[in-house]
Length: 259
Image (cartoon, rainbow, N blue to C red):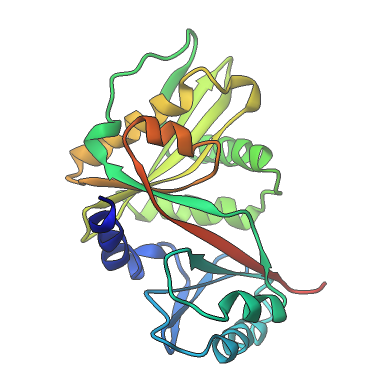
C-alpha cells in the first residue's frame, strides 16, 4: 500500500531537492556532503550502493573536519536503507543518534480540511524580520535548543530569494503560539511541511492541525499532489488522522566539534 509513496520519496526527494538553502554540495562516492549557513554540515544519499560504511564515514567526516567553520554535522539515515555496518561506523567516529522520526507521506487533498480555530487564534503567512524572528524564537523554545543569529539571517535570505517557501504562524494574545513552514519542491509532486511546533499550553486545541490544513491548501494551489514530513511522536498522530501514512523512519546522527 505504501510502496508507491516510498518509491516517490526516494526518487524525487533524495536529490538536490533535499537541501534548499545550501552554501555548497560536494560529492563523495554515493554521498552528498552539504554545507549550510551557520557552520552546519549535512550528509545524505540516495542509497549507499553497497559501499563500505567503515570507509565512507571517516572520509566524509574528514571533509567537514578540514573546514574549521563547521561546528556540527548531521548524517541522515533512513530505516528502509540497506546499510550494513553504518550504525557501528557512525558511533565509532563520534556520531550520536538522535530520536527517530517517522517519514510521513500522503495526498495534500486529505489534509486540506476546513477546520475551525479556538476563539482569539488567527493564522497568517509571514515574511518580515520581526515576524520571522518571533516564529524562530518560539520554535527553538519549544524544541529546547538555542537560536543563533546565523539561523535567523539564513531563513530571512531564503524568504527573500525563494518565492515558494512559506512561513505560517498561529497567533493568540499577541504571541506566536504555533508555527511551521511549507516548502514546495521544484520539479516534484511534493511539498514538505517542516518546523511544526506549538507552545505546550496551546496544544490539544486543533491549532497545529488547522495550520497543517492551511499549508496543504497552499500546496494544492501550487499544483502539488503529496505532502511529506519527518514527524515527531507528537505530530505523527495528527497527520495520521488526516490520512498521511508512515512509510519509513529517519534517524539523524549528530557529530559536534570539541570546543
